[in-house]
Image 1 (cartoon, protein in one colour):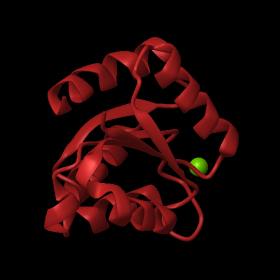
Image 2 (cartoon, rainbow, N blue to C red):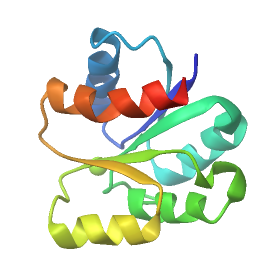
Image 3 (spheres, rainbow, N blue to C red):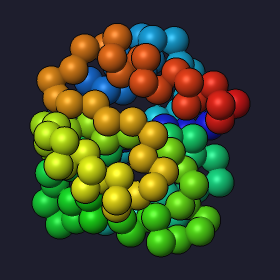
Length: 129
Ligand SMILES: [Mg+2]
């Protein structure tokens, strides 16, 4: 069973996302990071079995945009699907995120419902096996 990395500076938000993932029936192990630089550390140790990264945009130290741009440059992790989960929901921001990481697999605007999260990640996790 592959892992899901949840990156958000809000602990409450991370817990909420993880709870939705579990309630939706996904048995995937979840990993957490509170900013982009911590996410890089965690991904470096877990990239071989990480199926999905759910990533906030606005975080201290290293933003979600900087993080997804950084991993897009590293072949070992560039192919990992990333879904942004953020208040930054304008067309311009979505285009900016896509430019930063061509493997952007989805974009969820906060606030979101559990159904939206489930519908977005289901095909990605099914494809990952
Ligand atoms: Mg944030």
